[in-house]
Length: 310
Image (cartoon, helix red, strand yellow):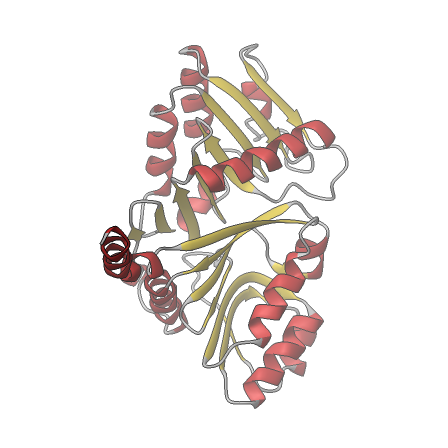
């Protein structure tokens, strides 16, 4: 009788178990994310939608053209495609972003409207294989549909107000400029109780630097990694370096710290394409808030690796 009850409970729970969001995180260059993205693109059955700031990935374009020949709906929306990629393209539809009011800086891939890659790398050989980047691989029908709808809004050159956001218990996804990503970042920093750890390609927003100063002054432990190639005059590095309770450094060895992530209290992660800059507020960007201890632990491990070695 007890076994029968357990089987009935499991049967009732099965739809909820199957609908749970499956999220993995990968880090370049160690995880070879170009291979991971490529293998998933090759398995597409219906559609592949791509948004990227730039695209310089010959093997990726070759695979996109090949699946397009087999009937897969391939659409690629770019800010700055290399001229040779644009001219040599055969089957995959490539469109240039031409809105002068904003820059297309988001980076995501949607496969069959249910598999999503989203994060910090551009789809270039350098960004995928040499820079430090992070990318989420999400298997979820609702999130896949959400990204597909936003992609088609961008593809159709609809107003930014058509972009949607997404929320559930473990993940929040926002698109700027429709949503005020700066306020979301500041609110999360303000709610920190113990620690802030970040790795940031470009960090010039005084509002976030000041919010971190206030958090540090209250006793929050703050550690940060800056990309060394960024403009030292406008960078928040020199502001935050003035305070002994904030520990920061510049990367030393990796080609570029192209990440844009912040880990709060070792259990909340903010990531995506959104640099901490004024221009990011006007750009088309993604900001993702993850409330998942398992994923946060992966980011902490990665951050410590960067802190120790770079």
